[in-house]
Amino acid sequence: MPQIAQLAETYSSQIFWLLVIFGFVFLVIGRGMVPKVMGTVELRDAQIAGDLAAAEAARSQADQEELAWRERENANRAEAQALIAKAKAEAAAASEKKFAAAQKRIDKRLDEADAAIAASRDSALAEIEGVAGEAAQDIAFKLAGVKVTAAAAKSAVKDALTHG
Amino acid sequence: MAGQEAKVDPMHQFAIEPLFGSKHWELAGYNIAFTNSALWMAIAAVALWIFVAGGMKRQLVPGRWQMAVETFTGFIDNLLAANVGPAGRKYVPYIFSIFMFILFANLLGLIPLPLGMVGVHAFTATSHFTVTGVLAIMSFAIVLVVGFWKHKLHFFSLFVPHGTPLVMIPLIFCIELVSFLVRPFSLGLRLFVAMMAGHVLLEVLSSFVIDGIHAASSGIGPVVAVLSFALMVAICALEILVAAIQAYVFALLASLYINDAENLH
Image (spheres, rainbow over the protein chains, first blue to last red):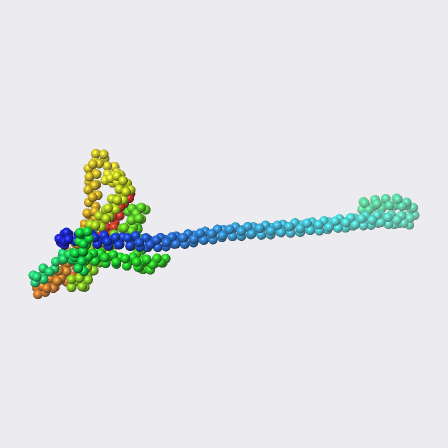
């Protein structure tokens, strides 16, 4: 077994060269290069995490903007609805007022017409009474030769008119 | 025949040979010959450097190579995050170095170089306990330093689990202390034994293949050779798995021990 047979003559060179070569491996590769490799990995991880965070932030911002837009939209719609309702109410009120005015005018003219009709009828009636009284006076004079006074004839006519 | 059989030595692959005439290099009286073991450790380190350097483009959208490197760093990062918690992050460079160095050394040692016939063959540095032992002691030293640095002498409470009855404390303390001190040995020996056993098995099976072909006249020889070869292929696949698992086990246990030091109970 050379490991033991050659121990005395080779141990120093084995240890020496191992320390030299492993020292190189540790200092140059382990201390010098490995941290850079791991730094690259960390940079990449940080980049990925940053990108993900930025995407997340952009998404939440978009959500917020959509929410705000929706609120604005709803407000606008409500405002428009209110405007329409107000216009409708105003129009309804205006037309009602116009209707009322027209109705009033019509009523007034009806009243006037009624009054005119009543007046005409009254005057016609009065005329008829007068004419009938005179006629009754004449008839009574001509038929019976009785002179009836105008007042008596008139009251008799009135009496006959009212009693039918 | 007998001479050829003797040439197949399953242990020869672990022999350390100085290269480039560096046999007598010395530093402060100690031999530091640049051996085949050192060469393959260096190859593993360079291969690892090339691998990680290929993943350093730092693109936001990674290519395949960058993805592969990031998978490994992420794997070690997760391992430490799961076993040590947030405090484990600072150990990523060390655990990554340990894991990848062992993984590359294990896998490179499995390469069946076609130049094996002329004596050039892959060497598995992690099949030597001088190597795995140093790696284990380094990991254990980190545990000790961090433990005593963070918790001072309170670190010894690691050896007294919660809810231990008062009379049992001395005994439990001794048992826990021994189990703690055995850690570097188990850590280093596990890797060394696993790598060596696999390579010895492959070598023994390959010797069956060669001996079977040499004994073609006996009739049963080629059958043994073919069966052994099929088994070798299967065990090669298993060894690749073992190479990865042992590197993972080493890194996992090192991080578990660090957890003891970081988060005392």
